[in-house]
Image (cartoon, rainbow, N blue to C red; front, side):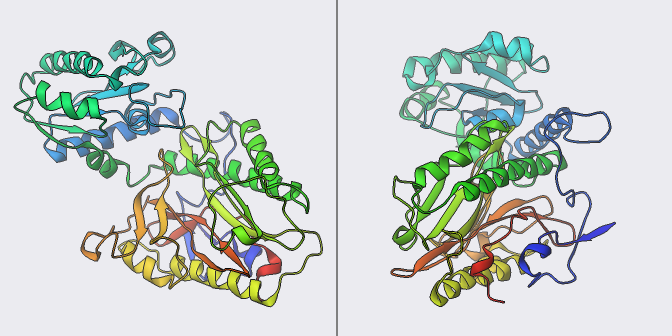
Length: 424
């Protein structure tokens, strides 16, 4: 079974005529609760398949173990969720993944984890909050990790991957593992995470659906005289009401002269009649981030200038050209080059998953040389987000979420574009 690009009714279908997308990535959206009458997201299967991929990546790397301190990696191997701080803070949760073994979890909320995570309850240990911020805390953590590795038959590890560092880890780990080579554990984890399972894809689609609901609420609320922060608050309110755990970034509502040069945060500016308004937002569902962007004209009946339409079309055409280059086997460099000049900061797109930005990165050759570019594979999920702007006229940011399929791509983000800014 195949279906046409679901976005066609919204944007005149330019650039996608005849392209078809096939199961399993074609599902247009699932409900947010568990039901017995439809196969939705299978969380047990998702945990199992993610862990299998992490184990395979660890085995292929030749390392004996991974020390995981990034919360998204801890969740990837275990499903564990902890409260988020909007800053780097080592020790809220961590994990030890030994080659061939299931993960061990360290957390300050050990009773909660043991009670509610039976699949890892007997492999969960207490860690004082922030314990990895001090050298003594690192020593205590490593001594327990050594004990667990010895139980697995690894008394003297030759190679260990570490996915993040702070100064305490930098100073203590080489002392505590004097005969061990310490390598980039994040590289190993990103190899596992670069493609998504069907349950991950469907969770990302749910995250998009909640994000789209926030976009609709923000757009309905927006009118001349509203502040940017008030418009953003409507999106956040909707996210939270629908179960969003966190947000993709600070989230952006940017208007008028601040769209060019682009100001990537929200202020208390009063949005005026006829202003161009960029809304770039993302909810998080079950750990997975939505993230998409549209540019609007504020005010019922407000008409954009010809110059504003031209700017929007440059970004729109760059987006469609880049998306037309997406297929299995294509290089991210080729996708980047297809967009032409409508790019901000050397990045045209980034992967979506348990991190708000992860591989594959669709970047310039200055950032990622062609011989190191990502080769697109089925199951990769990422954004395409061109930008074009001219001070005195305005700026346009657009963003779609893409799944690479066996035959091409599936455009997750089916939210319409600003009709007034499209050429007819």
